[in-house]
Length: 253
Image (cartoon, rainbow, N blue to C red; front, side):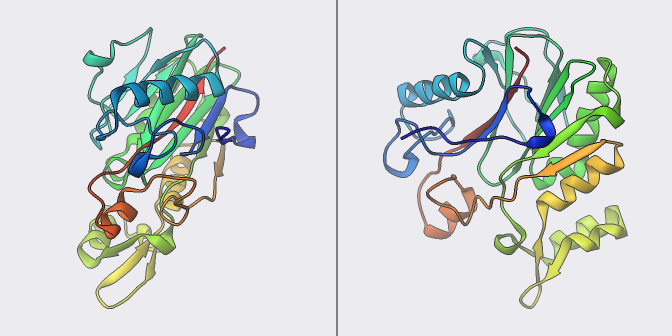
């Protein structure tokens, strides 16, 4: 099966793609293009899937990733990073050619960013914790430190869990409202004591507040598309013992 690479018009010609589970070599619960080394999938299959993912976006590039911990921490990448020593962080920026930045998700929002004039790229893992803590704000700031200008940055928010699939409780919604009362607009009424949270819209609002000039949302729901995407919440609801991860990539040729 061919790898599905979803690209964003906002990012133009820069090599990038939001990849799902189609086209890999894994089987069973991880069937397809599982790139999660933290899963119970075989190491050889995950390595092959990662190689295929890079080849589909920027052949010959060196994949760089971080140990994602749902933080707001950002790493400025200047060269390859040994996988065993990858830093604990949730975003990366670089202006070095030959590298491709990879973000893993399974419901959280992957964000790819590019300032074409400055030749600076970024990639962020925006789960609710990291998004609320400001991971996208810090990613934009790190890109600016490399010569980008926020108003020139284009950002694309990839496939993630959609509002219709993302039920949260009152305590969760209060946490966002206490941070900024305007965040209430990202929650729709749900069953008693619950709400439906629009993660992608929240991330887009944070990017806009950081001055990003162009923002595109890829309207794909990871929870609702089991043939196309891995989903932590879907696997949990099904009582499955493990789940795969997909990857989003951006690089400079």
